[in-house]
Amino acid sequence: MTDLHGRTALVTGGASGIGAACARALAAAGAEVTVADIDGEGADALAVEIGGRAWQVDLADTAALADLRLDVDILVNNAGIQHVSPLEEFDPERFSFMLRLMLEAPFLLIRAALPGMYERGFGRILNMSSVHGLRASAYKAAYVTAKHGLEGLSKVTALEGGAHGVTSNCINPGYVRSPLVERQLEDQARVHGIPEDEVLTRVLLADSAVKRLAEPAEIASLALWLAGPDAGMVTGASYTMDGGWSAH
Image (cartoon, rainbow, N blue to C red; front, top):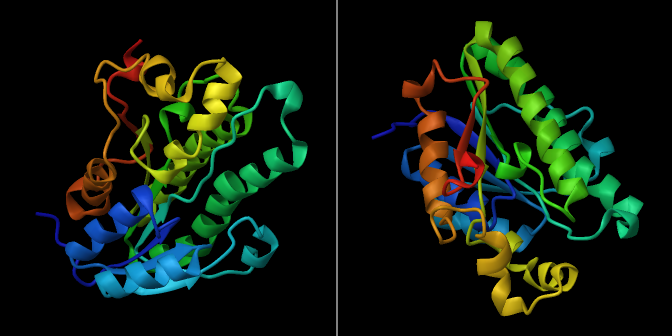
């Protein structure tokens, strides 16, 4: 059983989905958790539930994060969105927005957290990547680009942080039962020219050996282990939880 009493954690995109599951798991293990989300009401509600704190923040406003300093032991970079569109129709501002949210913001949060982690000689940085950080899918240019970039950022952080007791790893889920997946069903049906009720079997789970969505709590269980003392020798790694998708 991972014991995180005395540790502090920050989970971005923490009000729902994978982020909420991670916040609950870390809090249950004893960590003092800050739930960061643009949804202030959702963050407040979860913070009350787990006895933590809420931080309403727009992480795509990267200029506001430039001088940030974070005093946390565990940083979970989870906030993200999806947009499904052919490249020739992909809105440039949407592309830029997604890279700010899912790549630039994690860089700025890592940058803000490392000095304190170095001072204490302990830190756990968990970057919620995706199987799309390792593989590509059509119609997801910004998401795939951001997640591939996050993989590189995580590895550089691992190399720089190793001497200071700081680990950095990626978690790479496939499709998870979460709002992010649910919101893309209509767009997937449109670009693939199929009925919406066929998207799950014909698109999302087509390459998965395990024909179901992952549950947020399953992802959180891995995050909890990576955040704990037994994972001190695990860094610069990418852990797939994709039902066998990337085995192809």
